[in-house]
Length: 216
Image (cartoon, rainbow, N blue to C red; front, side):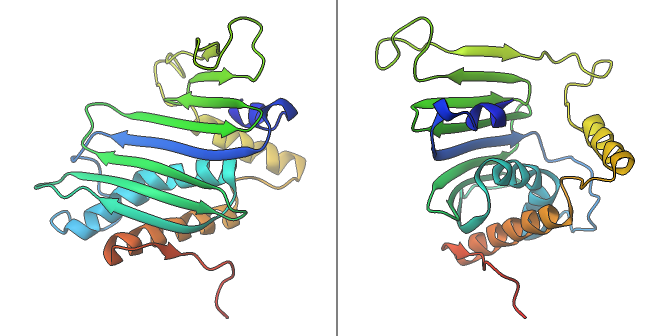
């Protein structure tokens, strides 16, 4: 829904993108064969198990990332919190706020357009859209006129995370119709390039450029 709203003429051209992704931990499953006592490997686990989803969502709205800079909060123990700057192909910028040891799973995606308009999704089931010319209210500094939609958390007999069943449905529909399925191998490769660049930036302490093409 947010993607469709962002593509309407009234939304205008995208200006910037922000996302927040925080989750509980430690204590999650260890599916990747990584050392629980190695800090660098645990950070990588966090990226592979969680931030890969945010990488997918970010590309869905903004296209490919060409440069990334990650700054980590330095604390004791298994606390992972990051501020991440993103440069996208085409000249736009954005940022992420990431953390591991939150009291609850919490996510936000916010996209601003020069319509002016803005759309945001909170926790994957609450949407808010602020258009340039609302039917009521004045906007600006006077008030906050917004359309809001809440899909609720009662999904699939009580599970609150929509998406998994839809993935299988999309895959089955692509097989039946003979059409391409997304996300595909290209999307997975691009997401992993973002994860690798994020890890490299943390290690180097500086921005990392993602090559536009694979070295021959």
